[in-house]
Structures are given as C-alpha cells and as structure tokens.
Image 1 (cartoon, rainbow, N blue to C red):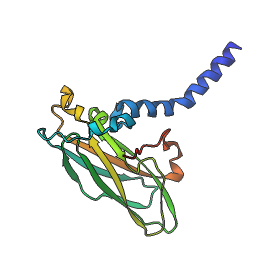
Image 2: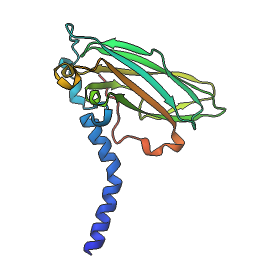
Image 3: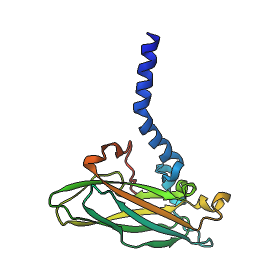
Image 4: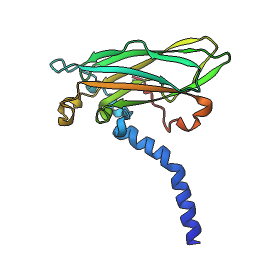
Amino acid sequence: MYTASLFIAMLGMSYAAVPLYRLFCASTGYSGTPVIDASRFGKERLVPQQDSRRIRITFESNTSDSLPWTFKPEVREVFVVPGETALTFYKAKSKAKEDVIGIATYNVTPYRAGSYFNKIQCFCFEEQKLTPGEDVDMPVFFFIDPDFLDDPLMKDVNTITLSYTFFNSKYAKGLAPVQPQAVSA
C-alpha cells in the first residue's frame, strides 16, 4: 500500500510540475518570465520616473517551421523610462491555404530583468486563428516596474529584449497557460 501510494503521489506530482513551474515563473519573474501579478499594476506603479535613464526595449519574433505564417514586430525598438506604459504591435500574416491556429510563447532577456517587465495586455498563450491570407496586428501593452531603478543588479541593464515565438497550435497543446496572461488596466 505504501509503494502504491508513493507511486500515485509521484505520478500526480509529475503532472503538476509544469503548471506549478509556470505559476512560479509568472509570480517571481524567474528565467525571464514577465510577472503577471495583478497587484503590480496599481496606479502608483504607472508613474513615469522622469529623472531616470531611458531603457531600450527591443522586439524579436520567431515562427515555428510547422506554422505557415510570417510574424514580425511593427517596430524594432522603443525607449521608455520605468513606470511609463508603452504600446507596440506585432504583425502576423497567414500563408496557408486553410485556417490555421497559432499560439505564442515569450521570454525577456536579460533574464534578471524579467521580474521588472510587466505586460498589461498581450496575445501570448492565447490561440490566434488566421484565415488564408489574413493579416492581423497583435498588441503588447507593457511597462518597466519603477523598482528596476533600485535594484543594483539592474544598474548595467540598458537594453531589454522581448522575444515571441509562434507555434502551430495543433502541435503545441502543452503550451497553454494555467492562468491568462493578459490583465486589463
């Protein structure tokens, strides 16, 4: 009975490992995952720090070979001060002859800046359906947490890169999030 109980507990923990890891990363910013904690989006956090240095935010995009889309950022970079909100767009266009559903993952580099990169709204981890030849603009609304300025590990960080990779949803079923990534402001 003890062996069977141990086996069942280990099996249950193996199934829970991925969702728990995603939850841990989303709440701590570990491994470059932007924080999605709603308490970090208060009005007091969204005040541009006027006397601080501007941070260069660059945007990258990748598409899986199994997804017949083009996908790229509308602009390659923006400059923001911590606390300032910014809106940018990525453009996706289907080259398929039938409807295709894609899903995007993202990361932030350098990884240590992930806990300060707060996305208010984005298209990541949500299935996006494009018809043949359809093109869409996908928004990303974000800000850098003002606490970025007080962290000694961030003193040398002048550039943060937000990178998205789109996959064919048919082949990426394991990528769906535990909780939605977008938080309305």
